[in-house]
Image 1 (cartoon, rainbow, N blue to C red):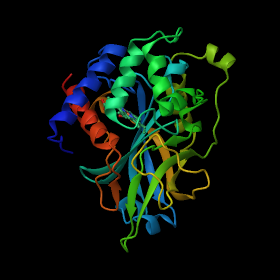
Image 2: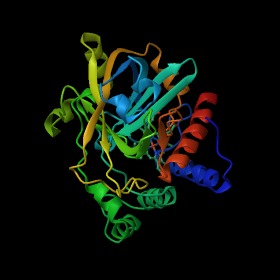
Image 3: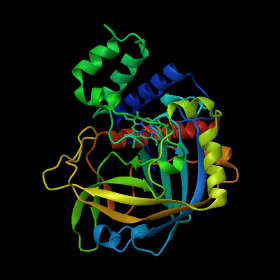
Length: 313
Ligand code: HEM
């Protein structure tokens, strides 16, 4: 994937990366966000309806190998899994289409995002860094949240700690455009739903949990039996806003099943592979196109810049 030439976008990307470092500190070799993670492998099998939605290769061939990364929020590589700031969890999925050819889904466990644009997100992070979360009264964060209802709604959305990475639902957040073999276009948002159902840990249990309980649990779980998710798509209706991650579509929009993700093994050299892999929020495969959501180009640039630096560390 190429870096864009847009100077303003590159400067904003640098500013956002610098702001993450300012908040969390800099840990060379680790991601500035979603620093702590674990990788697994498996396969994806499309449902019977997937081909009617998109002509994308992995939605039409019988099965596709995948490599995935579960992660905690924050840029802290050692954040305890029970820390509330480790929510939302991340789930990045790479569909291996051929040698060096792939397409990704990047999702997290909260349905939504605090800001529509990257510039607003930078403002949000700066307000966060300049405020004491225990005493918001009169703080820059209070002012930001007062002026940005979507950010306030995101902050107030409950973000429970899952009992397992395998028992949380993950959301693609950004709408994508899906094109089928007849050229029919429709917009949708991913939902990755656990076959085990949503299960969360209660406060009392969390106090007892070791720092890596989620990372250790998923390795143990996948060693005993496959970890299964349903990959679904919430479809937009004509007129729904498809370029704004802060806007939710009405709950009655249809959700279709795209296929089943079955994870079967941990990646052997997970530390080295996590350092190497750079997920891409832009699909870059025929049959799935990015929407005009302004976060997409920016995130693709940031993840690439950050990933290249990580590989060199
Ligand atoms: C302006 C908006 C955003 C900014 C600035 C941002 C920033 C970042 C950065 C710097 C990284 C580390 C990338 C790397 O070093 O490889 C990252 C990773 C990640 N972000 Fe975002 N992000 C944004 C929006 C989102 C949204 C909307 C989602 C939810 C779908 C999301 C989910 C994730 C996940 C899951 C990862 C970890 C991916 C992996 O495992 O490699 N981010 N983000």
